[in-house]
Length: 395
Image 1 (cartoon, rainbow, N blue to C red):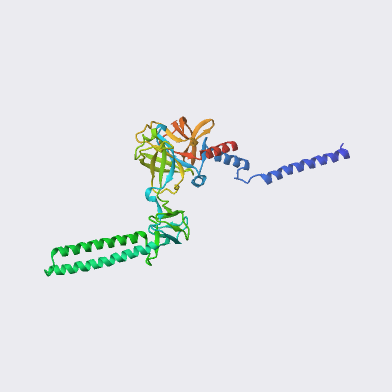
Image 2 (cartoon, one colour):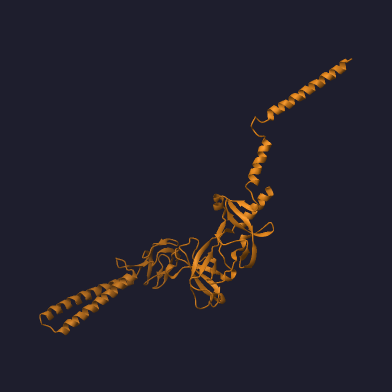
């Protein structure tokens, strides 16, 4: 017999069971995927599996061409070499003889015009300043007097020739007149050359100060209104497109260098410029006790500026090469406790374990692990190592 209280409890239990069943069905209806659609968890696992295990391999750093261009990494194609075949020296970028010039005053005078300022471009033969000089009038008067004497000598020589042809005068009179004419012409040429060399202007009062080469004004040693003497340095001009590199090499090493040896100029920015040994000084600098090796860069490198300090590597022809490969020390990074070099591969760079031999002057010999012809990272390898370690931590 079911009492009222028992009946009431039974009804509550049945209602709760029905509500629980309805909730389960409701939950399945709300969260279950539609037919043919995989579960969200399974899809995520598949994506993770395909994205990590399918493409990632140990020691590999993905790098697209766009990222590579913006990363600042520098690569090089490796060749066999040896530290014994390289001479590393400090050097200075200088101007060759035809790449710089002094602009001087050809006569005494006062600076009345300055057409150029520091850093301005200038062309060969262009007037950079004007001098007001009394010597300009002297040059012009000498030229005019010489021209008058030359004209009179020519007329006298013509007259003597007519008289000689008429058998009126002797041959010696004709020869004397011809000699006087030649002497007058020579004097006229001398005075004309003096006027041109001094830069006398058309008004006969000023001297034009002209640049002998094209380039830029690198120094100004005068000012408007200054009185300058003949031979005084007024400006300096340098052609930035013409440079040479003067390397200071110890005497013992300089004896091994020959004209035509290949060289590499290392720029402070991290880039390199190919060069060739042009010549070597036969004597040593009295202060540094080093010989100056003149290097000629190939082409017109934009990264070299006159007066800049750089480091050079001179590769001796016929020097020992062996089976080693020489790279900058910063190209070698510790990856998982081993010396490694990042080698360019499809889609990025692969950390390759290597065996390092000798080290000297920031260079390291790689005796195992690499082969000639591969492209490796020589600058910025630490960035790749950091990215590799970060990706491993994320995994």
